[in-house]
Structures are given as structure tokens and as C-alpha cells.
Image (cartoon, rainbow, N blue to C red; front, side, top):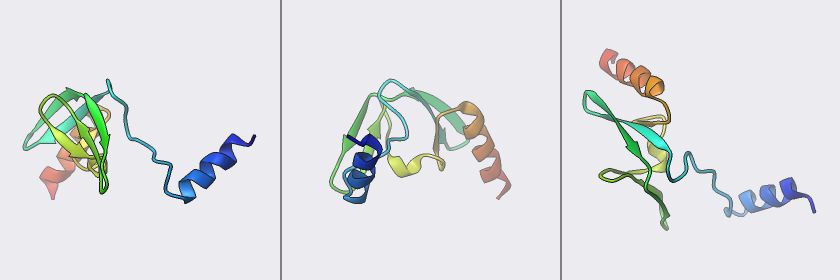
Length: 85
């Protein structure tokens, strides 16, 4: 069986989703002027969104690259850009 072909067909049918992180990963979240580090506790697939939760913050998959990052360096770079706008 052609695994790649199966994945491509699933993606075309809307059955394949690439998650930006997994449960247990650390994420860095811009919160005002601060960057807070949190561990991903759960990922929920809802009818309209993919919801990612930490112990105290819930955000959507689309927040990655905007206010949520996989490294502190990326978060610091974005925060600096936001300050300069």
C-alpha cells in the first residue's frame, strides 16, 4: 500500500489535519508584554476549530505564529515586532 497516497487522499477529503504541537509539548504564549511558558494538556477537535489547552489558557490552532510559539526565541521575536508596530 502507498502510505503517502493514502495521506494525500485523506487530506483532499478533509480527513487529515497537521497539528502544530502534541500533548506534553511546551509552548510560549505572548500575554500582553510578557511571555509565559505552558505545557499542552489537551487538544480537542471541535466542529469549527482545533482547541489546544494548557492548565489555564485555551487557544486555537491558528494562534501558532501569532501569539503562541514552540520556542521562546520565536515568541520574543514576535513580541519585539509587535512593540515596533
